[in-house]
Length: 73
Image (tube, rainbow, N blue to C red; front, side, top):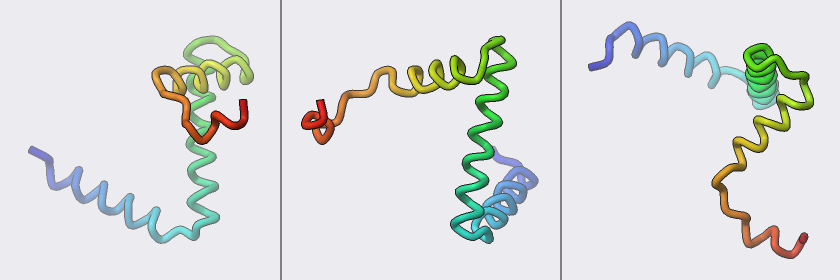
């Protein structure tokens, strides 16, 4: 069962994001991604390039290649 406080905070956060312009939403998304990379770097004692490489590899693991990309190989 979800608390009323959690529901209120989630709704308020959603309202805040929906009030942003598309440009501001994109900037927020990029900033959140940068924060994730920084946390991963600190947790695993890696430099930026290695952390990004690890995260990309983990994101791609288990995905099937798109048929649309077959012509690019």
